[in-house]
Image (cartoon, rainbow, N blue to C red; front, side):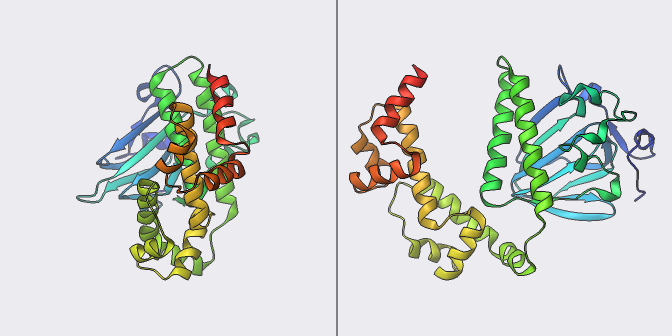
Length: 312
């Protein structure tokens, strides 16, 4: 595959499809979308905007610089303007992807002419992504809290983009800048040690499945021994991998999840604190109130009063 440098000439290259922002974007130089159940076959193509894809579920293949990379949950890629790449689905694979595409001037109108701007590379939040094809990072894997944070930002952007509420552009710009900052930090943090990376790759699916199970059954009696058996891992190794991925112990993760659910119930319902306690999986009201205050900073009752005042 011929390599194309970052310039406008590449869009005229033979056998390379060009996607023009003028036709791909409406109203604002930004769009975000979710692909569900399948990923389209995209042969060699390029575009005049920055493209970011994040994998929510499943796997597909992404090719750039004569190399093909398997993209799985937690992976993302960022492609600069006028760089040629290719996407291939895996046969029979159920895939969910969030795609985010934007022109640099969406962030700052001084980028209006990206081919001639002398100020272009003065902006730290775009410089790492605006590189020639041979310098593009083919993919980045996100883990633990970072993965959850990125997914939350992308879902929030998707909601703002679809709802078009007042000031939605400001929300989108703010979220986009935060997203780019997170990605840059992850780029700069380097990779894990080879030993940690190998362990993560080997047990990622097992741990991810367990986390999904915990998220679904958080209000039931969950024991560490049981989830370790479910993952088919020893307790010691499970705890090591789980904390590497989530930055929390199993107990911390479960408590934080239950407290988060209780906060939602306190705001959205008039359910008594005692009932909420048992509904989210605690079996002792005193213990629940103590843990709630430790995590949130105030008691459940005070939190409800404060939240009610805020939204009244």
